[in-house]
Image (cartoon, rainbow, N blue to C red; front, side, top):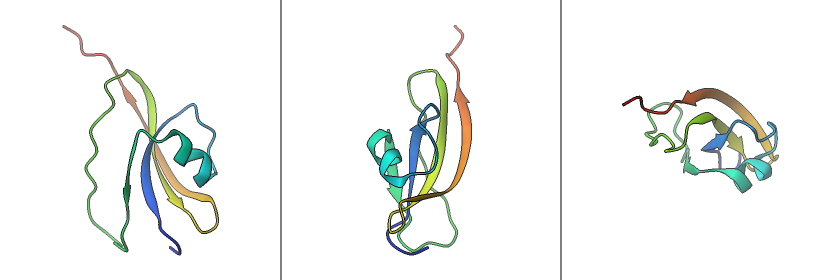
Length: 76
C-alpha cells in the first residue's frame, strides 16, 4: 500500500470509508510499517459494544479493509 497504512480500533458506529474520519475516532492504532504479514496485538476496549479493526491508507484517504467484533460485559 502507498503512504503510511495503519490499523485502527474504531467504534462500529463510525461510518466506513474515510481514513480521516477513522483517525478522528480511533481508540488506538498501530502503523503497518511496510509489513506484508505478521501480528498486531491490541487490548480490547473496557466498554461493551461493537468495534472494528480498520486498515487505512492515508495517501488516498481510503479505508481498505475491516473486520468487526463485539465486546461483552463480563458476567460475574
